[in-house]
Image 1 (tube, rainbow, N blue to C red):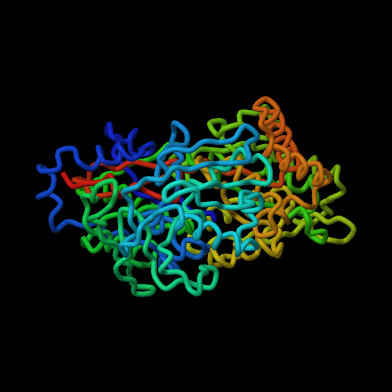
Image 2 (image 1 turned 45 degrees about the horizontal axis):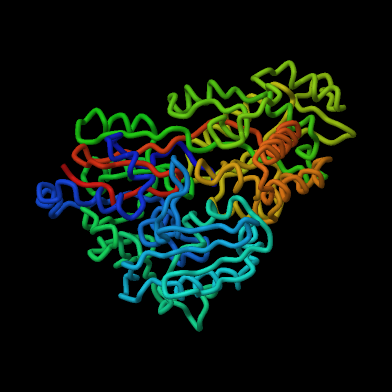
Length: 544
């Protein structure tokens, strides 16, 4: 899931920003009721229409094709990941047994699904068990491999039993999917794995209409347990990225843009600045959320990317400062490690690799890649130093970066062939191992380091990236261990080892640290960010 500098809309850093990310039940009510009488009239007739390069797709929250920002409006999790840690959401409180295996949750009693069905412990049990019966789809999320049972203790209390302690359990329960809740009436033959008959969650917005590849409409849930949202209607309008979206913003056909979860670019930096200069729009940017990177296939033995020296040479050949300044106009910063130091457990001392073409050439020479007189491409045993780099065709920044990196690698005698494909195709290549190099990004603040690192062992994610390195077995052993240890110091040590191994092997080649950037109407207030690049708290927004 890579993407451009596109622009996730986000928000004014007003005082309620701190509350937006870490709200339990009382916080949400407070955020929605302040000055309600004054704002009600201002919101009448006003709606948000955001541009998306792709359809919101299947909104079944127990599968993965759907748009995360859209699903985040409709469905909710038991707990919420905030800047201040895990907070209550649909669960008011919980306890964890001394051995770390048993979680007892006490649910809110004032929640209903959009179709009027009660949200209770039985509904929770049905949803979690439906996810677990489709285990192969969820192997990337380690919690799915550790759930032993879900038991209803009373109407609003349930117990989750794990096979072993797993410290990220609450973090993974807080994610946008798959452990969120759909009305049991929407299940098909008691299941969700083969499709659902409706999309009734408990969230602040209801999906009311969807016309494939045209638009989807979400209307405020007037019975929302946290209070009805002030913006009564949100529309996701499917538009081609670039000039079409820019013109739609100028004409007022859409009024909100942001980077969606599929990595599509809505408009470029110059177009965004034109909108801000018009005085009709505001720009709000989050702190660093993720790391954009090139992923190398260490398991592809017939590819030069299989060699550590080649991967390191690529790393040294990337001028990140120029990418940051010239391609992203400084909106993304140069990244030198897989995770930025503000990510939990990631402030680790690692080998420095700056932009250094001489070092890159020396690494290749030492590894046997020679540049014959009169040739532009190095060879080894008669084989050229040539690789394919795949990027998301919807992301103009990825294309520009790819062309820039391609031109730089020529200077060290390496040839890159560039291929732009749909994001789903790029993701499929990652899962099947049919690639040399491809663009991707870390999961982001709310999920890292545990989610990205767990994906190192998943065949649907980064198994092909990591399985070809010499220390693969040791790496996987440490990943299994770090997820279950209850010793905080040991956990820190294990994460340091894991990050050092993949850094030294150069299988994840960092490019820039990305933020969520929002372009929104000037009079839209209450904009804020969550601890994720995939969702926005639309329910906190209101028109001035």
